[in-house]
Image (tube, rainbow, N blue to C red):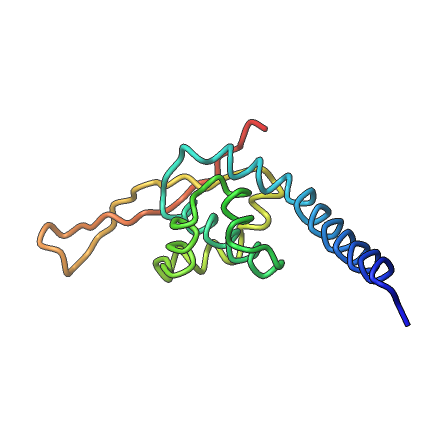
Length: 138
């Protein structure tokens, strides 16, 4: 038979273990946080998709949406929008294959407009957005 004190002590130990695990997870997110902060002023479809992928990874890691919003420096509504809104399939494929390496190498994609020949467009040309990698100053 256990008494109230022992039950409370066991519950507190369990809570402490959960908090230590959460602290360890959040401390491991330092490089991601630095990457997000360094690229926060740049806006292009590739970076938006990188941020979306990071958000999905953080949710899979077990963080709740509130913690994800703190790591990303965004509000809750932005996190929900990122979860629900997919990117252009071409951009999504490129980012999915490369974004972890980009974070590791401390580079980010920068959009570059390219004019290509098009038989469909009235002018005979159309503009497509490609990307080039730019080094971050971290």
